[in-house]
Amino acid sequence: MKLVLASKNEKKLREMDEILSSLGIEVISEAQAGVDVEVEETGTTFEENSLLKAKAVMEASGLPAIADDSGLCVDALGGAPGVYSARYGGPELDDTGRYRLLLENMKGQPRGARFVSVITCCFPNGDVLTARGECHGTIAFAPMGEGGFGYDPVFFLPKLKKTFAQLTPEEKNAISHRGLALRAFREKLEEYLHSGKGES
Image (cartoon, rainbow, N blue to C red; front, side):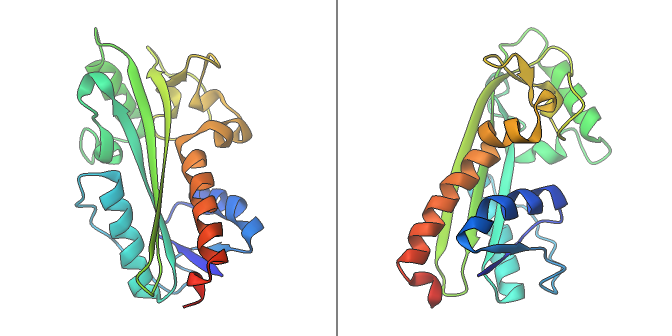
C-alpha cells in the first residue's frame, strides 16, 4: 500500500517511511503522487489541521494520505504557540527568530512545556485514522545543540539533561512527540489492515 505524505518536508517523509515500511507501507511525496496541494491550516487544534491536510491530499491524489500537525505548547503562555508554532511572531521570523521571541516571552515564567504531534490518515473510502503523541519537557534559558529544527534547541528534557537539538536522530525518534504518534498510528494502521477495511 502507498500513502501520500501531505507535506513538502523531506525529513518527515524519511521518518514516516522508516517507521511504516515494516508493514509493507510505502510513504511517497506529493510530487511522486503527481499532486501539489497547498492547504490553508484554518483549524484551531492539531487534530483539525492534520485532518484538513490529509483530506485535501487524499482527494487530489485518489490515494490514502497521511498528515502530521505538530507544535510546541507552553503552559505559562496558555498553550501558545500551539497550532501557530510555525507562524509564531509573523512570517518574517525564521526558526531562530521564533525561539528567540519565545525565550523573550518566557522571562520570569514557569518553564513547563510539551511538544504535540497528531497524525491523521484519510482513505478514499471515507475511513480516517488518527493518533496523538506528546513529549513533556521544559523551555531552556538559552538555545543548546545544533541538531533538529524549529524549537528543538530550546526544548529541554530534564531526565536526559539535553535539548531536542542535542539528541541523535535515534534518541529523538525514541521519545519525540512525532515518534510516539507514529508508533501509535502504526499500531492502529496494522489493526485496520488486518481487519480488511483498507482493501475497499
